[in-house]
Image 1 (tube, rainbow, N blue to C red):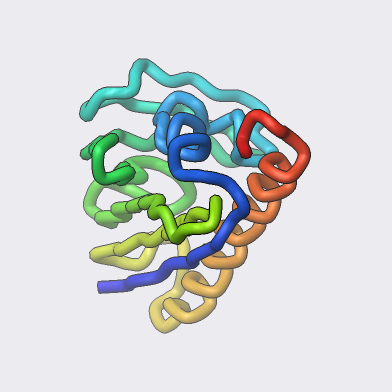
Image 2: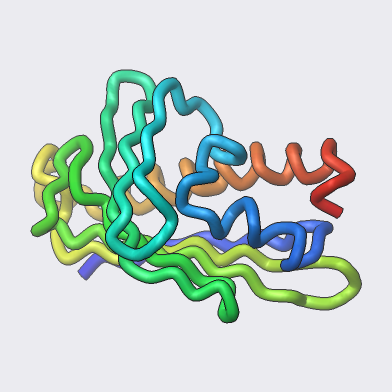
Length: 150
């Protein structure tokens, strides 16, 4: 089992943040560098197809809990990914007071993607956490630039 994750505190409320980051079909509103996006809904079972650079990634929504501000999805296809990889991603948002919220973005995999050599788990974790942090940097810049998210 491979586990990874990042957390970020942002200057906005959960009630402003959740409708954007918690909506499965809203990914292009906050995730950078998407060149093509398709999504067939926001309820469990929905799938989204994302193109970033040369990569096409498919994700399936597993759980959506708006009361707990939690969404969980599985990466079903992508570079080296199959459903058997078991790449399950969870995003939660929590109020931390003072008009601030914390975003927790974590993932677990049952197996290393097939395109990676055995023993490269640490490099995979580091690269994935860097990608998550880059996306949160982009999202935080959007929050700071958009009064509607405050």
